[in-house]
Image 1 (cartoon, helix red, strand yellow):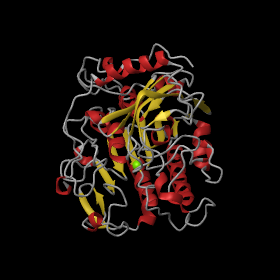
Image 2: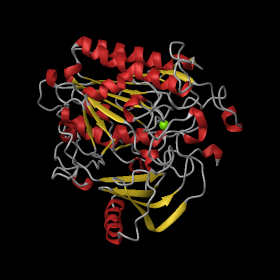
Image 3: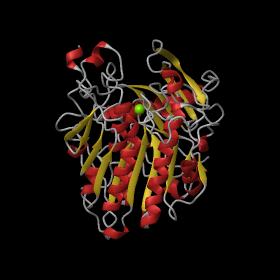
Length: 461
Ligand code: MG
């Protein structure tokens, strides 16, 4: 694989010297954007990614008509920071959406994504886009931190994880949580909604949003509640998959994707809509059969091994993205912000540090690469870094709440092209690679400022 000249170091990215503005394109030529974000879906959980018993004909077809990534990464290995990364195009350490004790927001949390952050829908608003968030938010649920405070015109969904309720989880703390809220806009419209119906309701809401905005450019952000535990599927799917309930849940998500693509085809929007399907982090391995699979990748949710951060990802846009390709080019959820803004004709403010790069060269020519670096954070600290095929681990820890962290000096070094499961440490054989990565890491860390965490839970201290 080669890395083209299009690769731009992070620091140069805040380069275009104009303010966000509406651009000069005719509104009708602007594409729509749909991001479908599964929760805790593993790299190995889809048919097209090799799962032997979970059936995902719609996602398989989406891949056959679009582009499938084998090396696409999320910005963090747990829910809250992963979502901040996607919507801001920035590592969550830059927005304060990380914490070494409380890794995500909890019902008593008072913080959330700072309003100073520029989100995808906020930027798109300047260009006349209508945006909806439908599903799990998890970037703050108190006033000032809801989706409608961050550029979304509409919101429908559960504002945090579906296990954060006394009705489904044991534990002293959980007992004090309020009943699980279902929110429309900023109002709680139900508590403890029937979770078996969530995937279907999110799908119906999404289809209504698309049909209501056929004539205006839109951004639909659909972060599903599933397959985060506790798992629920509707009557049409429960008990059907030979994988068990986890398979039922994935097969219903697959159905949902098929419904959405079908509406785009029926309304003629398919040729002007970029749809991207991915996951917020790897599978939750510590919940046994209720958790997914990272396939051949090591470990899962919560860790900085590949299984925690590399996620199944399919991009679809008939006639713009060539059909039926699989790319080995690197990509991240943080690349979506600059990709989308570029397509909408919006310039990136020159003082905004982004960790993403425009992925369009990869989407339209699968052989092109636009980035060669990945930074793996756990909480506020950098645990590992990738440069080209090489990955160095400075700290490792297995699973979600596993052993104590292990510090490595020299770091562990793996060649991910030859050793995707990270089994064979070659640091002793490749000292120059270790030094090159160390140099890259030092330049990167010099751009990170120490800012307050939004994820503190004062009443638990
Ligand atoms: Mg998650």
